[in-house]
Image (cartoon, rainbow, N blue to C red; front, side):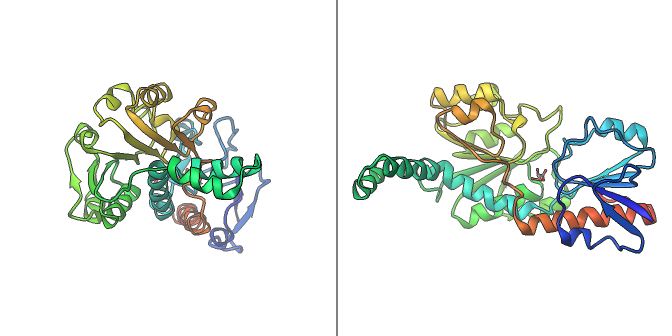
Length: 304
Ligand code: MLT
């Protein structure tokens, strides 16, 4: 009987993948063979000697000490693509928030009404105050053309946008997913130069930390709108705040608030909602459970 420890609430559909005659699932094992985890941080977690595999129900693996796992022979799985549609839909929403100040408008209506201003007056003032551009016929730049970047590019085309994308590691499988109207270019700089909107979809690691820094921002158009639903560390906070203050960046929508970002004008912060749909939670949990089962029972390794 394999013991699977769940470190976060994992969807019931995912857990149903593990046959109960061969897998016991609980959150209180201390001799687990495998771990199913979403966002819990395992950096300080003491692994039992039995542990052979960790499956992350999500794409990023920053909450797992990969080096320590490698040394101990623990295989780490993730679920690439399983939440791509959920993230794509939120990117679309974030582009519209970056344009039309939906977040500011909502807050303003509430504040005005709460302070006793007549609703008809609130509407009249708001119409004039919250004017923002359409995304139609604008250019979207995408850094990272993996499962999410490709879906985002394709849907942006259907909204009438022009799309430029760059990915130094573009796989054949992902290249085949891209609509032929997407301009796949050879450098990030080319993307920066064209983009009215920029969205980033790369994993966070030492090489990608601060991808959007002062030098990258300097290559962008004035008034660019930036969306980051990938990882906070990909965009340098000092650089983006200075670029907003100087007018280079019109608005920054991020799924990764910091104390400074939540206070800043021109920044819209979401509470890491990219993958938070029931569909994506099911998809990720099912894939993660299948990976654990196949590895523990058959020794097969997928997405490690
Ligand atoms: C991911 O890495 O895919 C997301 O962070 C998943 C999540 O929100 O749990």
